[in-house]
Amino acid sequence: MSGEVVYAFRVMRLPLLDAGGSEIGKIADVVVAPGLVGQAPRVMGFVASSQRRRIFVNSARVAELDTDGARLRSWDLDLHPFKRRPGETLIGEELIDRSTGTGETVSDIGLVRVTDGRVETWEISTVRLASRQALRRRSSFRLVEWNEVAQLFATHEPMAAEAARLRDMHPSDVASVVRVLPLTQRRQLAEAMDDERLADLLEELPEDEQLRLIENLDIERLIGVLDEMEYDDLTDLLSEMPVQQRTAVLDAMDAEEAEVLTRLLSYDESTAGGLMTPEIVILSPDDTVAEALARIRNPEWTQAIAGQIFICERPVAPPTGRYLGVVFGQRLLREPPAMELGKCLRQVATAHPDTPENDVYEQFASYNMLSLPVVDEAGRLLGAVTVDDVVDRMLGAGWRLRRRRRPEAEPAVTP
Image 1 (cartoon, rainbow, N blue to C red):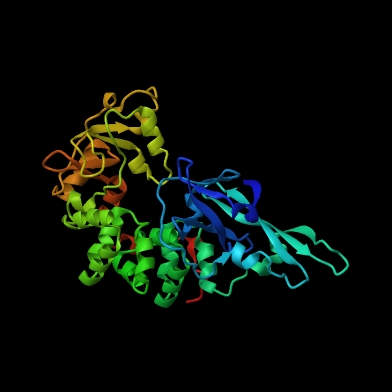
Image 2 (spheres, rainbow, N blue to C red):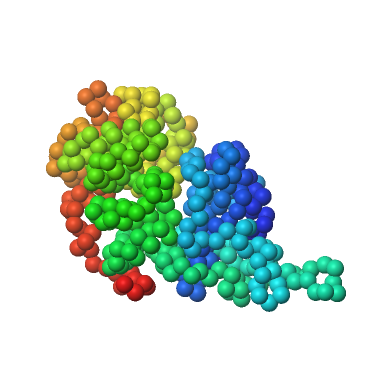
């Protein structure tokens, strides 16, 4: 399903809005890369100026793009300076006013939002061409489909094209493709991927393969990728790093995030503390059903995390105030929006950070849970163990290597 065409020249003058609609910057350019074979080039994201920096905003983080501006899905904003990846093209800097070689130049490029049921993004649909004849004072224009000027979007970066081919595949299938490539090509592919996609790939690989894949990344790129990983997967990766590398990574990270990771690294990996993630939905008892529904609507939450809300006395960031109980997502649908969450509480089993992992498994089996709260001796919530991480741990470290590749995951790059 395709939406209305939006022209890049207009997009590059729009404000960048946070999730609440407040302006936090300006869109300066549009980043595109080749699509799958025979398909239109995809919009990877937008270059924006914010706080006197040129930053990259992944297209997946943009909820709406209209005459009011580009509004983000969440409040998170990566302020790392923009760095163009191999195979990427900037519409404003590199395509507008570019000659087609036939006496015409590109005056604008039409973008359309596309949804195929799984992925929602923008792609190039049309190109506006300008030509000026000697006897005319004004240029004439014509609109063509993108594939009539496909040479404008061609790349000489084979791994950039491969990254584009894999963009819409499930990360586990991408991992199957990557594993059969030589290490050199794996690293080239990693260079061509955006931070979020590379983070998804890393989470599907064993830690030793993760380390080999990121070995040649500079510290700035590495931090950008690690920032996109789930806390539990990131903790596992950091625990496998040489001490010197781990220290350098933690020193380069945001102080608050480094503190959280240092605490997670202190737990034995075979305990609830070693399995848990602090990135869960936590609210206070005086918050309302409407506020809870708004929080779990965030598409970045997994089903296991969005399925229940943990209720604690303030503060509501781990380690929280006293843990009180949970409210299940299904219960929220049956209550009036103004009801306080303290009136919807349920008590479920809990674990301590040092609870052995086998006891955690038994808790999940006994109570059919999506996530198990982990509390300390003072009754403060530290995080939760989710069912997907329990399954991952129970299958053992090598289960991804044993997983059979699907037919559609055959590599396009010759080893």
